[in-house]
Image (cartoon, rainbow, N blue to C red; front, side, top):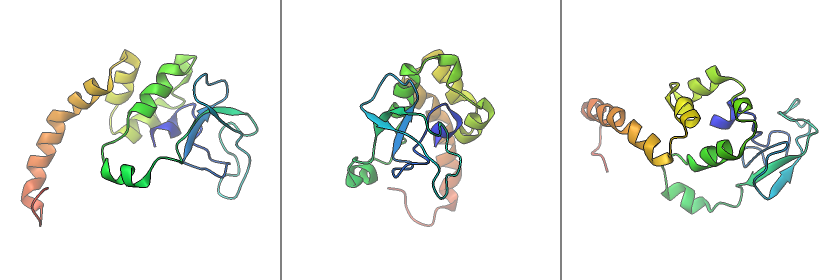
Length: 141
């Protein structure tokens, strides 16, 4: 989860861990939660502080399974609304590790759109698919 390396809480310390995203003072979203110590989250990010953001627990499971693409719009929307912008990435090196390279972080900082980001991945994805083809046991869909 890209949010782990940012100022956003992903709901650790709530009953909806990894189903909500928010931060103290975040100006967007209609869901509030306050992370508190719980089993598995003894010291959650933003412990005791009210966080505002989005509850994603109601997304239809069938839709999530059908749409297998990485959902970047939550990250892009959160980044666009978060202030101060320079406080969003708590650990740039960790974000880059989660993303695989620094390119996604740098694209966010430059204001790239989701379409531009996805387009930038296309050449590498084509090369990967060509390389893996000889190892596949079954035909690609």
